Every structure is written in C-alpha cells, then in structure tokens.
Image (tube, rainbow, N blue to C red; front, side):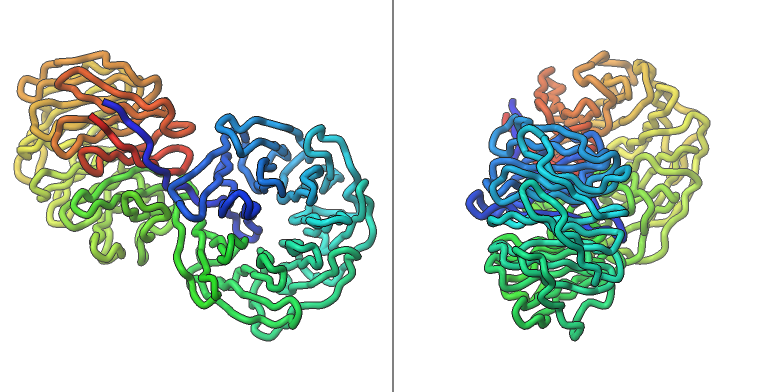
Length: 605
C-alpha cells in the first residue's frame, strides 16, 4: 500500500483592501510561471498546468511580494517583518542565498536590476522607506532618499544604464541613477497615493498609477515625464496595478472599479476594457502579464485570466486565502467542495486545478463555515453564526432561508438513507429532517463530533470530556440517557465515525490516538493506535469501506487498513498541518491544509 501526490489546488494571493497585491511572471526562458505571496508562503505556479505548485515556506510573517531574478534562477521575497529572503527556485531545497532585514517594518515591493546583481526594496520603516543592496552580500549599493512616508512600489530599469523609480504615500515619484544609486529628481504630478510603478521590458519607458486614477508615462533613461493616459474611457476609481505587455507597446491596468483596461503607450488611449464582476470582492488590486495573457487579482483572491485579444474574461483561477475547515466529496460527479473562513465555499473538479466556481447568492456571507456534508442533491453547510443552509449541488447557489441553531456547529452527520441530519454544536446536538429543525438535545459536555449508525438507530457523540456517548434514536428525537459510553481515549474527542458496514466505531482524539470499538458490544477492539504525532483533525472511509484516512496537525495523513492492521503515512502532506480529508473514490483522497491549499493523493494497493 502506498500513497503519492497527484497535484495541488493552490491557495489564492494575499489581498488587502486599499492596497496593491503583487504577482509577478517569470522570465520567458524558464517557462510561463508566476509567483505570489499567500499567507507566510511563496507559491510558484505553472500557467500551463495549474496543479503543479512549488512552495517556499521559510518566511515567519505574511509575504507581500516575490519576484524572479532576470536570470530566472532565484526569487527575492519580502514580508511584513521587513525581511528579504533570496533563494534558489531551481532546486528542491530552495537554497538560501541571502537573508536580510532591510526595513524595520513592512516590505511592500521590490525589484531586481537587469543584471540580477542588485535589489531595491521599499515599504515602511523608521525614517527609512527604501534600500538598494547587492543580492549576494547584502551590502548597500546606493541610497533611496527623498521620501517622507511609506513607499508602496518601485521598479528598476531592466537594461543599462540602470535606473530606479519609487513612489508611495507622500505622492512623490522619485528617480535614481547609478550604481551606486543616488537621487536624481522627483515628479509630483500624482495627487493621491502612487500604488504601482513598472518599467517596460525594453526599458524605454516606465509608468506609474495611483489612487488619483492617473496613469503617467516617463522616459526610461532620464525619468522625465513624457505623457499621461487619456481620461476618456479611464478608470473611475483607484488604480492598484499595472503591467506592460511583452512588446513594451501597451499597458494593462487593474482598478478598484472592477475593470482591467488595455492602453496604448504611443497614443495614450484606452483600447479595451474587461469588467470582472459587480461585487465588492471583484475590485481589482493587481495585475501581471504572463505570455500573451494579462492576469489580474481580485480583492477576494481570484486570479482572472484575460483573453489574449483582450476581449473577455477567459477564466478564473480560484483558491482559498484563509483557513480551510472542511472538504467533502460528491462521489457521483467526481467533484468536491471546500469551505472555510470568511464564508468561502468553492466547488472543484478532481484533477483540474483552479476550481470550478464559488458559491453564488447571499448566504453565510463572511461567517466561517465550520462544518459541511452532502445530503442527497443538497450541500449542507453550518457556519459560526449558528446558521445552517441547504444548497442545490446542481446550481451551487444559495436559496431559501437559513435554519438557526442554538450553538456554534462543529460537525455534521447524515444518515445513510439521507433522511436525517444531526449537527454537533457547543451546547448539544441539533436534529434536522426535511430541511427543518425538529429537535435540539442539550448536553453539558460540549459535543465536538457526531456520527449516525448506518441502520439509523444510534447516534455517537464525541465530547470535550474525552468520552463518546451513544444514544438511541427514536424517530426524530434522541433518548435522554446514553446507552453506552466509550472511554478509552485520553483527550478531547475530535472525530467519531461508524464504519460503513456498521460493525465498528472509530474514535480519534486531540492526543493523536485512534481507538476502535465493536459497534454491537461497545467494547474496545484496538486502542493506543498512536501513529500520528499531533491532534487528529478529520476522518473518512473509502466508498467500499475497506480503508480509512485520518488527517492531523502533524502535517500528515494516514491511510488505514483496519482489517489487516496495515497503514501508510505521507512524509509531508501539508505545511503547518492538515485540517480535513476525504475519499473521492477508492483510490483518490483530497486533503486541506493550514497552508490554505488542497491536495489530491493517489492510493495504490
């Protein structure tokens, strides 16, 4: 028995309202790759195969910017602590070339000089808002002076003679000549924050955009202003990102007005506009050009691929950018669903990166969706604001009114015949039938997890006091007193599940122990199965019931063959821990992790 990684469904970029999000493309000689920060990680993705993902995990705080060197062999990344890390993207070990705290607070943007020898980084510090230094030793190669407030963006001319342009909160665009780089002059034509500055690939010009809705064009060598994009068909709100096309003749911009526009550098006219959406989350906060396509970033983290002729939104690349709490599979259609913080709920097609769609309509809004299950042709979701919703799988759109629970939900169980739903909350268990709340059973021991026996006669409730209580189901109600208590576990019960054939009850706890009980006698069969090294977070069985998978905060998953007392464990499933797991079919497992990614695994017998 073995388990191998098939692919990764990557998380979305870090975004923040009112600030630009940096995504950057690799040099064309190393392929159509792009990189961005997500949480404390740097992701490198392949535009031609979205399930191929490389991850850098060594930053201790949120990553705001990552950029390839012009050679394509190294990446420089900066984070919220003012740390710059320069590392190889050509080997598995991600060999560190330089680690240096260059500012006392946040790094907002950085750029390489065209020879890959120097880096300029800008952001917020104490009396210092930008630095320029050698990439290998970290020694200063000039001075970024003349600014009085936080800098938001910078870029370096890709050809000799090298130049640097910086801008930010003080409304001043400064130009530097070098190396060593020294202040040359300022331009103060922007009336509000300068959000993004980018050089053309051939170095002939560079452009800046800002919250004043202006796009200014400058000569690349001298830094003198040569023009301004026409206000006709311009953006109506702040412009957060811009990027040149590969021929240096056109500019793509992304704005808070939810549009991406294409501009002609020579005529200064807008040539095309693509509207991304009409919700607040569709505000555009960043953009880059990958090959022939512009790719923009929405405030909600979506990556929007614009067609090469700039006529339409070609597709969206979806992902989570906050914690994922649960993943469940619809085995009839080979799809699965993931839910998490901020009301995020995404539908995925197994084997296809980028997601199918996000939930539509007004539902849980920004509340954390903590529990989820499939009941017939509906997706059942329960959120931290104590609401339960039923969403048709066919439309994936919220409809109807929510049910209100007495407590915050932890886990959902669905009966084999799909007629009954039991939800474990912090005050007891709630029973739902025909999409109506029919009863609530109060418990003092704070239930954490719940499971219904396959024959529909019992419900097992795992509690915070380290015990599992078995209750008889009488119609739509629970008989007051438990018929049995399972007490072999020595920590908070995290998951309890009946095996699909109903012969056993499997219990997992926060002290990484799995115990197996006989469902008929309620006597323990196997205890102290401590093959995880941290709290177990989730559990699921294969469709045929032969195998079980468990996920844990020890960063791994284990697939169990309980009948033959065999198991197989991953080396490293997710950085920081695995939050959920499920079988899609007999040989395919999907996991969700603290790295905000989902992964697909192949199980071979």
